Length: 305
Ligand code: CP
Ligand code: NVA
Image (cartoon, rainbow, N blue to C red; front, top):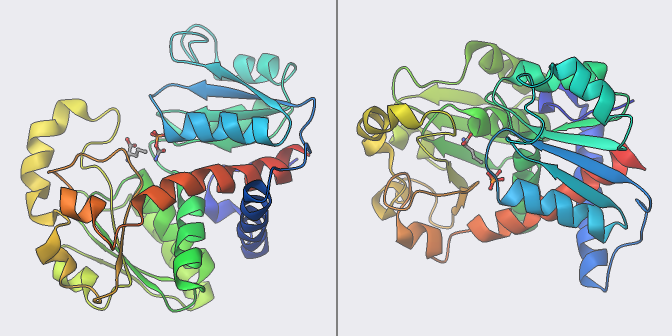
């Protein structure tokens, strides 16, 4: 049984297949609708944290493919609090055909997968956001028509999104650069994973603190919130540490003139990104958000059929 927990655990062929299938399902949807390949199947969606894109794109993705989804919010099942993670996995997987979970501790999603009888999808943990990165690759491929040789610069926090985007770049053959303040780098074990995959695939991975260095010659400029879910108490300190890394017109000037701007959302306009970058002609932010739907469907189609 296959799960979708992080991009390092997927083969290159599997990942390419997800993107090809997402493009196919997107075209099919736009031409009138998808085939009901998940008829009679239900996805259980566990959320320990809030969500707009992940929740709605998975739920709509299931419906478009003829299936159904059940939302289990933070106050409902009490993952690991009201009931242990293995017990939740054992019980929930006897009712549904797939589980998608958004958690704090990445080990919770690993435990769900270990004890579940049905496929488990990571809908964001403190360590990774693989569904997001897959949709991002889809967006880059649609914009540039290819992935090989594209240079992506991530400016901001070395967080879950940065980790999955770094792994996605390494797996799909893009060069990845990241500028973070000191002390906010990607976690060492994730950096090692990404470096190893990048070396196997002949792509480069650069970590630095100066945004101009990351952005030089970049085709894609990517940022995410400076304050991830669960870090709210550190907000003031983080805003101060990250303020030199705002993606604005001056910052974008360091990248290629036709570079695109990406953000996984939700954005904190005026902090990590300015309005003119979000809403300007180089922004692909809302295409990214829509592509969550199409990328999600590809994952569901491969894991649940
Ligand atoms: N990008 C993303 O995962 O958005 P949500 O937190 O709204 O799901
Ligand atoms: N890094 C952010 C991503 C939100 C989609 C967070 O974890 O809150």
